Image 1 (tube, helix red, strand yellow):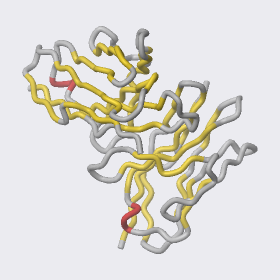
Image 2 (cartoon, chains in turn yellow, orange; image 1 turned 90 degrees about the horizontal axis):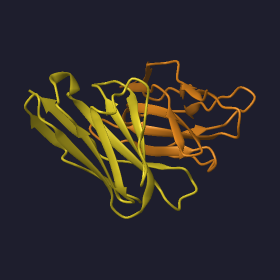
Image 3 (cartoon, helix red, strand yellow; image 1 turned 135 degrees about the vertical axis):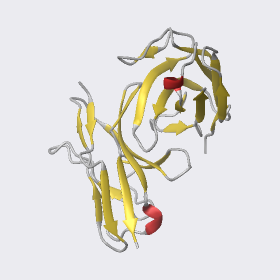
Image 4 (cartoon, chains in turn yellow, cyan; image 1 turned 120 degrees about the vertical axis):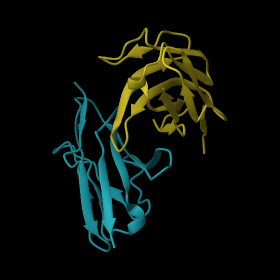
Length: 117
Length: 107
């Protein structure tokens, strides 16, 4: 099946620094990728929808200047947490849907854990 | 607006008992519905989709347009079914997930 990979799987950074998380579709092309945040034992929170070649659509309450999303190619989307603070510590997950797929299925990355000190 | 609700945050059943995880949606068009599952320390993965009308790991889900529901059922729960279950609605390029139900199957 289709594989989505995230990197890094875990990152620890100092407060005030910026962190970039990559989401790659390894064996398929994805026009649309989604970014989520997940707190421990809680539900997914959709942060933004990322479309290749255009600006991401952010959900209400998500700061677009804080969470920069770039979807420069059909296989890569990046989430940059700018000037990270401890409250940004979380599990970030991406998902992608296949360009030619008509089933609508989403494929999820393994997640990236961000710890801000 | 499109919405997916899962009324139970946590559902505990004993092994061998039937289980039903509820999902209701609101969408004026023709819905495409899915169940995703997240086992402990694993990524989210597709469990089943309504258009396939298949049974995966003993789970089935029937789309009821009249009740706008897509409940997930299994006649005999197993301990390995313990996980987080998300109902999802796909419309156009968008996906809407429900808040999830944590299923705990007790020995």
